[in-house]
Length: 372
Image (tube, rainbow, N blue to C red; front, top):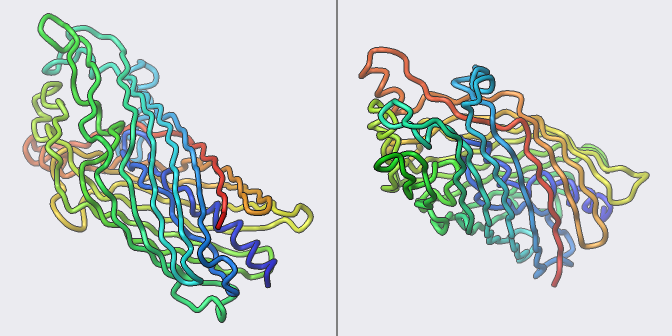
């Protein structure tokens, strides 16, 4: 039984720790911390244990989609937006007993955005056509969460379900500024808000709901599933986008929205009996920004959309330290029609749908350490 619990812990750690891998470019699904799905203990030897986790993420988004259709011409003519986004999530989890645990997460973000249209496009006409880069760096939105295993770990030794509730605080700067070029008087540069996709926070206090589950068919083979939803009741944060200065038809996108976000993943895991501590997993993952929030309004500027990915994961555990690497590869990218797109469609009597840049894959790597 102890071996079974060890195998399950290894796999569940790497399949759940890295929620911040959600962000995939211009569809700004931000880092909100590691999920805390630890295997429940049955003998109480881990009661009062702490777990320190550090998880890093990097991706480069550069391929534009409107709906599920890629605009390949943007790559050909060099007008595509290129985002480089890296983050480090530091999470501390406390295992209270075999049912309860709580977690606090602090993300540190480093982003850059290279584009043409933000540096010279004024009222639909390029004053000067040059590519420039804006950057952001700092603390993201912190999150606190509490978790409980729903089934008695002493009786449900092959599988269990964990529920979690949390709060996301607006600790990340949602009005980070850098220079836009060729937009000021006489074509000078001007300090403006960076794009929503590289802002450090969304400006809203949100509430998170999680459901995590696993089941082991054999000692070294099982399945897992995770669901996460962030509800942001605030409709907009008052931060100016400057999109109305680019093209007059974008007047209803002048202020940033505070959107909900979601994630679902499921797959299989396998632990090698020949190599102690080595485990692999593979599954599908869905992540995105909805068009409409569950609570509150959904207007102003957001880029809703979703990404389906195939996610291979590997982990290796040495005593109380676990290391992991995951590489989710996008197979479907869809920039859906926003509320403001719908408003413009009615206003101009034609279908209007913005685009967004997505990454091909995301690199996630990190470690976790348990201690008393």
